[in-house]
Image (cartoon, rainbow over all chains, first blue to last red; front, side):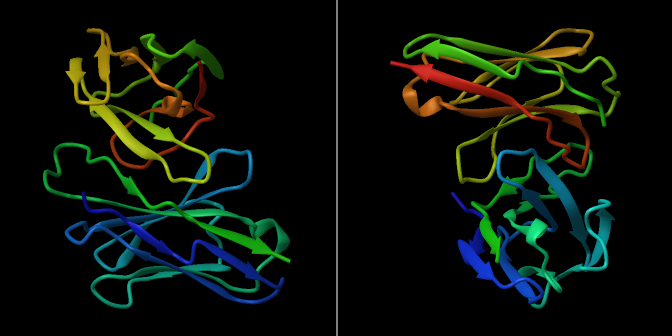
Length: 117
Length: 107
């Protein structure tokens, strides 16, 4: 079964540094998402992306964050000037627009654990 | 996007059938009901989705009454590996996760 792949599995970064998290969505999917989960807390929506642009973003997704689809297979999340509170699991997800009349479930990767020191 | 309410935690024993009920009183006409499962240090995994009546797949069944204000996820003959957090969502696009139900299966 195809799956969403995220790299690295664990990223350790000094506070103030920039970090890029990588995702390879399922190949025929066209909707892409980033979520984060702070340890012991809920999974929080960050941003959705379709047709090479952001379709929706949450309050968490401020100017510190950006997303990009640099080629036909990768989907990245960049966090500039990281803060201690950015430490979390970051999940990428994708979904298939096969039938726009029917809600399509999202398929998640296993996440990148980001630790800010 | 409808607000959902589900039990915070549940315990059951191996081999039992587990039913987790979720209420979504404000569900909209276009909303689907979707359940995800999350193991520690892993991403949420889609289990099952339905709009009305009953849906069954190789993992679970989903029962949705006619008024669609609630739904019940049924896991047949659970095993220790079914210990996870289960999320109920009612919407048509954006996923907003609640705290889910922490299911603990005992030997």
